Length: 160
Image (tube, rainbow, N blue to C red):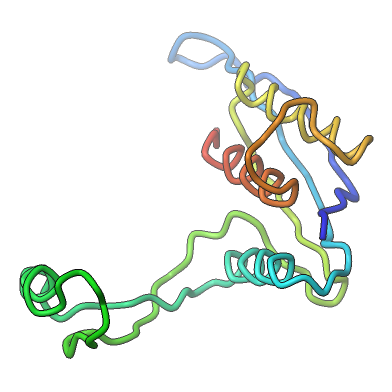
């Protein structure tokens, strides 16, 4: 499965002059993409992970006592994890959303105000090239769909 970027829009702007040293360049990114249909297990899993990142709450593993767990994993379990630890359970935590999933259209949407830097420009160049050709200019060690998602996650860290 590959990701098809259906829309990628970048609006570069400059903030108004402020008291912290002048105008600051930034960009507003709007990007939508879809996963092309596939039956391969890896492709289904990567889409499910992307959907999970778009949910407001995330299910996590919780431990009753981290020190007790460390002692258990080092001695009783001997790092094999064949025995179950009796002090763990599941909980929910708020998820810091990177993108949203529009279920009706089976589409993902990313919108962010980011710093307009050399790094963000390089990432956006890669995404624009991928959108037009379906491949990347550079060689990566993972699948193209993983690279697209990593690039979008990276852009979200440059928020303005």
